Image (cartoon, rainbow, N blue to C red; front, side):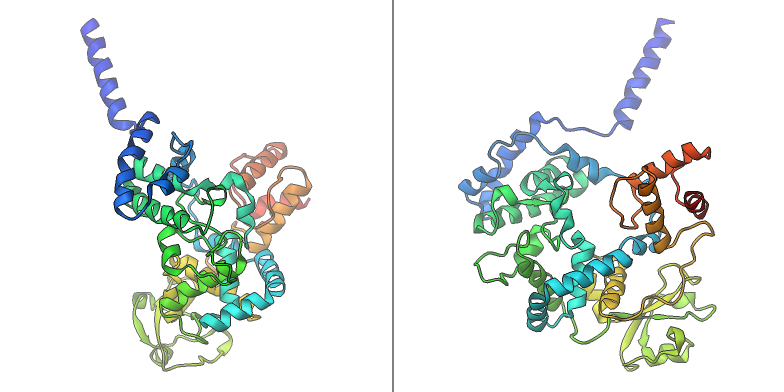
Length: 401
């Protein structure tokens, strides 16, 4: 019996060792910092800069690892992603920012050849027009966050090391002090969320104070974003792409590049019969929800937007929001949503009703994240239905009554 117990215990220990992800001890972080310090020095980081950056820091940022390893409970469909970013609130706020920062937007647009509405859309997508920077609970000290990734995240170790050196060079240049050197868990910084290497490559001092301050200077932040697009081949005065009706059986053509006139011959048309301004230009077909959804013919500028963030959904979101901010109509066709799925306006209404009834105290932004879903679950308990936290037309109807 004891032998059996020993075998079971040994097997249990082995399973624990194999199935439990490795957790590096905090005590090893200081040693890692000591070992990496001369490596950073070989790449141009002075000792005084290093000492200033890590004064009083002896532990890694555990919350960075939590966010890095977080697996979303709910899969984000393209329509849900766009609902949370291209909606009446982001449009209204963007138009307000357009008025407030009129002179800055005009100056940046004239200098870099990027439409002001595109810059506003990027600002919205990256930091909600700077609102994220006002929420310290979502921010991290950049050198510590990047050192954490370099030390404790095997998948992002190389990224963390290179970005940490770049971040220290930013500090060394005097563009930002340690007290304001904040960013996302992955080191994305400021109003327009640049990682350190991109900041060094594209950072612009637009306000003329000898600092490239994307944390506090909106002119610097917008000019830095415009410079990235400009240096990666942005075509002034050209569109990012066009929404198109997809002819039946054309799914096999996704990803192909043709002249717009050739797409027209294959039956691809803009909704409402609107003309293509430049049928002689090349475009790539994108079907982001499959053949059942709307199609898009993407131009060069769409792929330049992907140099900012390589996701198709991100570049489409910037393009659609920029069009709305420029006064153009939104999408005409509908996404193939499930029958109970809410559209963007309904998501905002759901949050408003949850707040009105005392279940929700978060932002009204159409983004149904953990806070909204927890509020839905609480309402469901009171309503006597399964508290799964899932938003639906049925739940919205219950809230309306």
